[in-house]
Length: 227
View 1: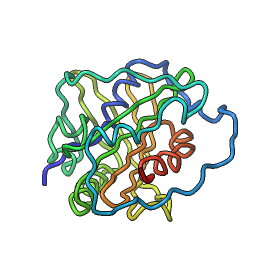
View 2: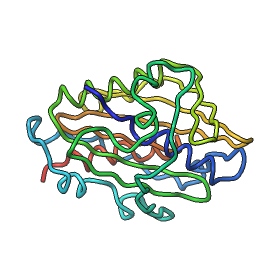
View 3: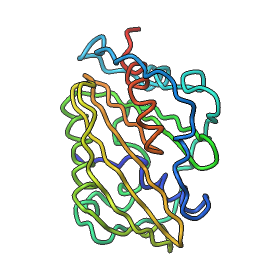
């Protein structure tokens, strides 16, 4: 099944072109709070949720706390993209390599900024378990299978490095996690991306590593809460 890579690289591209050189993850300055409760199992492993239902399960400003601003939805139009030095990622296609969303019809997404240079985004998908599992597995295998590669976004070269991380255990049914580092024209950024499948719901949280770690369990709990 052909899938489209999640918004990670597209988000990196936008961040690199918009933030000051060598941006640091400032999320560590966020006030410490008690960790959220462990996420519950989904009410039904066989229920495929609609996009409208998924939207109500996304985190919002009241869930995240003070200092978070919702980002407007990104236009679907963007520069042509070419992947160099990573055949597995190239096979997914230039468009697939940077974004949009996964090719599942039932989906919802929200993105937030925090402080001057930190961001966090959440994506929810719903579908048959095997399709969700196979789709996200293909993406993470391709992206973490190449330690270094280059992305050409229009005429802008972006040097990429990927690192597979140990995913959080005990959450959902399957987990994936990776760290992506990107640099161009003296600017650099680091993005963590963690995906969790719980039944027929797939959650992907991406952004500044500290923010991903802070909000992951809260996002999963809301995404799988009994309605």
